[in-house]
Length: 334
Figure (cartoon, rainbow, N blue to C red):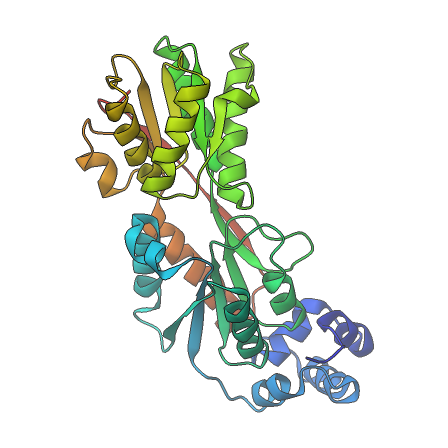
């Protein structure tokens, strides 16, 4: 990878960063004068020569990479990933682009994926389930590769993003539990290195604070967005706080694990412990009892990611962000 960045090219050419991105990605929405200035700066600085030469020549791979930072077992077991991927494929259905799935389960996987992407192996990138602090989005932005992430954009990375209102959805869930007369409301939080885990925990804490109740650490356990993780975390929480009468769980899949653990402990749901999940996947509707949950439009999230990426690729648009609404769905578990 060249030491030069998109900002270096923009400064040398005397144009904006967005204009450089449009030129190196073959957008027609650039004046001839600006295009010539950028091409000269790219050549002078040696900026990403392989990708730049290919893009400036008008050649495209006509592929888009969906990069998922999760083990393959979770990709196929968690309805969130299935629905998001369905939305992505639906968004690409009427386009010329083919989807390439890249799994980054290890450091070696991540290094190979980054090398491939930075060499211009695809025209654009969709990042799903990225961890806090993962440098890939920033490096792609610096290389001028159109990118959209699911969740918060990393600080300083000029990429598009699509997120759900995780904090607001969690707050609505806990407000519902408070309104139902629950007093000791714990949470099975998602991983602290993922934005949804952090945001949903923040919504839980904010709702408790607004109700005049402390969000103490002994009311929190963390799990990995799996059913087994949810069960383990719930067992730990029950040992620590047997007086809990409600649980906000950061995903439906983890909430199924919570229901398993509560059932094994002899706790009746919702009579003794109310449970609220997050996602409103098919799992929520088929749970026993059916799960009260926060609905996020998962397929729409995938479609919006594609729309944002296509705007950058085909229209030369600047990276933009979208936050999707969430909605509480009340069923028998709460």
